[in-house]
Image: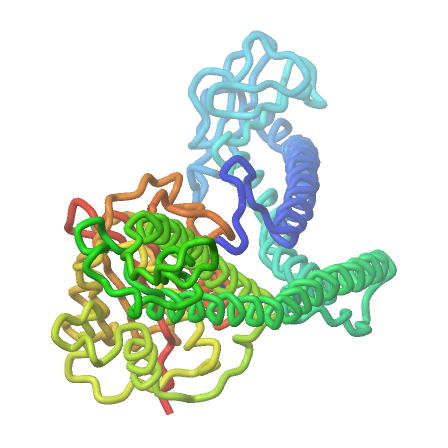
Length: 554
C-alpha cells in the first residue's frame, strides 16, 4: 500500500466516477421520459374516463324516457322513487317540467332541480356531474347526475392502473442500466488495474486486452509512454549507478594516497630533531649534532693561514639552524593540517557517493522482494555497527523491544538494513553528541503499540493515519518501529520536504541530505508506511520517524 503522498489529488479538484455519472445520466433521462409518459397517460386516461362516464349518463337518460310516460299517466306530483341498494356513489335522476319543478326524483337526488331553468347539456355542480336532456313529451326534462366522488374515484383508479406498471418498471430499468454500464466498463476497469500496477519497478507494457476501439488507442499510448519512461529511467539509473561505481575506485585510491602521505609526515615529524632554544644551544656539544649541519668554523677544521685547531662552540651558527628547523616544523604542521582537511573531505565525498549508489538502487526497486525474515537481528546488527559495543559505558542508541523475542515480517532484508541504517544515521548525526537516540519496537495491538498510537493522535494527520492503518487487515498486527532523537522542532514546511533528495532540516552537522530520501524510497517500494513528526508527540521539541512493517502471520 503506497503512502498517500505517493499519489495526491488537489483539494480543488472534485473526484467523480464514470460509472456513477453514466448511471445517473441514463437513469435521469429514463425517469424524465417516464415522467412525461406518466403525465400524458394520466391526462389521456382522465379524458377517456370522463368520456365514458358522460356516455353512461346519456344512456341512463335515454332509459328514463319510459318514466316520463308513466308519470303522465299517473299525473304530476312530487314523487320519490325509493330503490334498494342506493349508495353515495349511485347515480341520481330528476324529471322536471319546463320551469324546473321536480316531478319525479330518486331518493339520493336533491329536492330542488339540478339545473334551473333546465337546459340541455352537461353541467358540473358542487356534488354532481349532471346531464340534462329534453324528454320525448314536451315541457319535460330528464336530469341524470353522477356524484363527483364516484367520478374522482373511477378516474384515480384508472390512472393508477395505467401508471403503476410504468412506475414499477423504474427499479428494473435502474438495475438493468447499472448492469449494462458496469458490464460495458469492465474493459476499462481491467485497463485501470493494469496501469495501476505499473510503477518505478514495473514498467512492462500493458498486455493485450479485449478492449473496444476507444480504449485500444489509450492502451497503445500508455505502452508508448511506458517504453519512453523505461528508457529514460534506465538511462538515469545506469548513469547514477555507473557514476557511483566509477567514482569509488578513484576516491578510494585518493584517500589511500592522502593517508599514506599523512603517515609519512607523521613519521618525519617524529624523527626530526627538537628545536633548540638560546639557553641550551651553547650547552650542546658539536658531536651531538649531525656533521653535515655544522659549519667549518664550528669544527675548527677549516683551512687558512692560521694554524690553530680551536674547538669553539659556534653559537651563532647553532641559532641559524634552530630557525630553519622551526620553519620546517611549521611547514610540516601546515601540511599535516591540510592533509587532515583533505582526508575529511575525501571521506565525506566517499559517503556521498555511497548514498548516491544506495539511492540509485532504491529507485531501481531493491525492496520488491517479499521474503520472510526476523526484524530484530537486522535492527541489532545496524545498532551495533553504528554504536559500537566498546562504547557500552555511554551508548547512544537505546533499544526498547519490550518482551518481543522475534518479529517476523515480509520484505527484503538487505533493503531493510539500508533503510534502518539511514534512519539511525540521520538520528545520530543530527542530535547533540551526548543525547541518546531512543529506538522502540512494538506490535500495534500491544499495550506499548496502543500507547504509541494514542500519543500520536495529538499530532493530527500522523495519529489519524496510524489509526486508519490499524483498520486494514494486513496492518491489524503490524510492527511499529519508532526512532526519536533530540533536536529543535522543525517547521511544517521543512518537515514536508525533508524526504526530498538534498533537503536538510537546517542542522549544522555533516550530511548529504540523502538519508531520509533513501529511506522513504525503500519504504515506499516495500509498502512500509513512513511517518515523520516534529516535535515528538507530547513534547515541545525533538524529531520522530515511525515505520510500520506488516507482520507475517504465518
